[in-house]
Image (cartoon, rainbow, N blue to C red; front, side, top):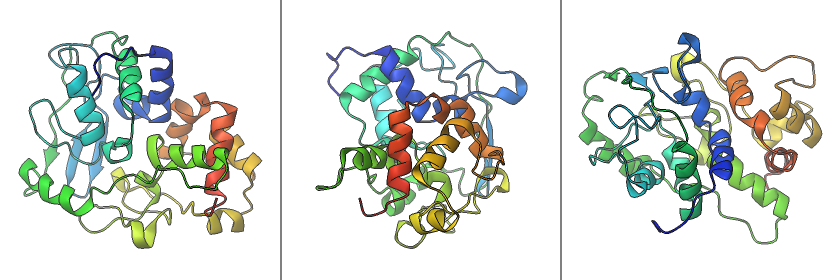
Length: 266
């Protein structure tokens, strides 16, 4: 990590929105402060709570260095050296550049401190043993699919970068194995029934989206507004994705995401 880089807080805030940080780390149900954590995630392996990402030096990340922040975001490893549970979508952030990290860090440094700890995780044995996460990482920590494809349009490649990276669409919309790893080979964007709390995510692969009548304009509009072509509104987790994330993205980025999702060949 190049610590000499100057971060752009505005760009970092935009990247945080596209990465879903606000939705996952703000307990809106209880009126929690922004990014103070405590969002409950019920999984087949136990219950997780999102971390406090405010600048509080004890309960948040206020005492971290930018190097520790970079390691957490890109590698999923805490300042103490413990691996994070993969409910934290760090596998999608591995390709964030040093400038991306500097910008995110600048943005997070503007968040007011909240001196409240997130609840302790309640994982069932043996998943409560963090050392086992090293085995999980060896099995399932694949590099993100964000690299540009030669010959594809700039818009399509930007959509690929967002969908496969920051926006981490595959975290919810890709099927998983019994151990919770994403099944890229057989279930990429084919939908999943293993969302926290027992929720389900529909398939968003190109063939399915086209069969359901989506086009670039309607998909980009839905990501902005939460309204589908039939007039229905996104609910559940996807509603939160739009409300706290994608509605703040530029028209160009939303068009890029829709372009990529609707054309799996570039």
